[in-house]
Amino acid sequence: MSEIQLDKIGLKVGLEIHQQLATNKKLFCGCKPVESVEFPIRFSRRLRLAKSELGRYDPAALFESSKSKTIQYFANPESSCLVECDEEPPHGLDSDAKLTSLIIASALHSNIFNEGYVMRKIVIDGSNTSGFQRTMLVSQGGYLDVDGKRIGVQTICLEEDAGKLLKDTENSREYSLDRLGIPLVEIALEPISGSPDQVKKVALSLGRLLRVTRRVTRGIGSIRQDVNISVEGGGIVEVKGVQQLDQLEKVILYEAKRQHGLQLIAQKLKRVDLDTLSEDDAKDVTRLFDGCSSKVIQKSLKDGAAIMALRIKGFAGMFGYEPHAGIRLGRELGQQVRFFGIGGIFHSDELPNYGIEQVDVDKIAEVLKMEKSDGFLIIAGPKEKIEFAIAATINRIKEAKNGVPAETRAATQEGETVFLRPRPGSSRMYPETDIPPVLVTKEEIAFAKNNIPGSWNDTISALQNRYGLNAQLAEQIFDSAYLDLFESVCSDNKNNPNFVASTLCSTITNLQRRGLNSDLLKSDHIRKAFDLLAKGAIAKESLEIIFENIMSAKIKSPDEFVQRYANEFGEGELERIIDEIIQKNLPIIQKQRDHSIGPLMGIAMQTLRGKVSGEKVNKVLESRIAKILEK
Image 1: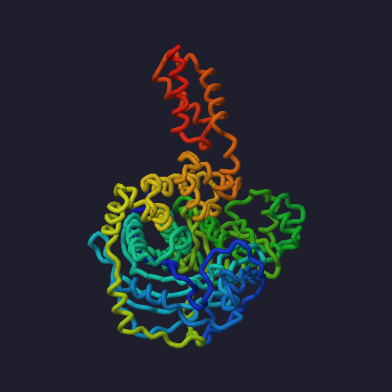
Image 2: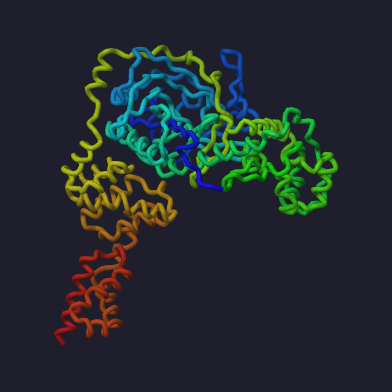
């Protein structure tokens, strides 16, 4: 298997950026866009499929409806109201969000419409209580300048964010409503041909343009990239949920490999006749597995599942054919059936294995009247869902002859993608009848153009000059989720800006990489910790320990840390510990004399880490060592 040459396969990538706007209320009601912790209100819904105004079903919505899931919603009056519960019509569109979208459109040289129409976009995965998302086209055209090259803008829309997924099980999903309705701007760029690194640079440039407006929110989840990826001769694959730039590069590389691999699979399938493949080729083989030793099969039988086997003529070796590492048609099919609440599939190219023995394979071959060149699949699942899974599997096998199907996939943390649903069609949009047309005045357009922010370079330069930061640290703090918090902490000149920026960009990031929960560390915690440092109540070394303890749920606040250790290390206790360290290390003092302060300081700080300032420890050590050397 050779490495893929991206410039030879016709790779194209189009970015869609979804950025939350920093407004004081949601897009269609007066609720505050705050993150709730408790949800006293709970209710459930089952969203049903309806035809569009054109009399057709949207394929993505049809796929979601086949899962038949019950949706549980969790709400708090501090962050949601009857509008989010779909018990009250939407209010007027938020004027601040509208102005922000106009400023962003102006900054991207986009052509703003003087009248906007809010549309309903059908979404029945449960993320919207109403079964649709409200969106309004703001402008078309324009460009983004990236290193002197213009990247075209297709559209800019203003829309509402979806509910936050809390849990997804076989038969139900759970969403909180605190995020539902927060204003988003959606920017769709024209497809570009380039390396993943170049696409990453485009995404970074667009993200920075949005942040310099000072009108968008920051942090994980506040900006999301949907990536449209295709190779020559294949369908467009939309990858949703890319939140980090490093992840973006990996996703593009993986999709290029996957899509090219599917095209190589399609070439081998040209000799296979799939026109006659139908659901009649599937047989119920549940009884054949009564004595099977496979744990997966036995669990399915215990759960009352049906087991179906599907014969595919001339398919021997095709499920396991791997043109690139990890790219197999069998894997593609396994991912698809999981979205019907089915654990996966077994196929003939991997059997006997997984507890399924040769005798089981022979029984299936007999029932299916298999020939040597044929292949088969085994699918086990709930009886009410397995027919949908069989039909979808047959359809996907037939699509495999055409190479890359147009579909929507989800990005994983590892930078791969998994099947999510078919691509939506033109039938998913229709007018929102509860909201009148939104007029855009000449005065609003003039305001937007007069408030286009300066360039990113100018912003970084101003940040350097104001706080005395070097270029690298200024870029890091500006690109981080903590810029506003940084400026708040440094506003009274009581904390060193370089130390504050380094702590926010490096210390907290390192704790996250260790697997600690950054969601537990709130802005108020960070602000309070720096306030305690400025007052001399804690040492610099205490900050990392405080953040570490909060992120690991050992304490709830910086004040709790202070209360816990305030009386533990008074002057007398500190001197006792220092004396004990000195007595254990007298040979070092006798040998290194004045230079012994270094190694003893290291030993002392390991014991007293964060509980006493390094300056105070150093002072006591110097005094004690000096007295010993005098003697």
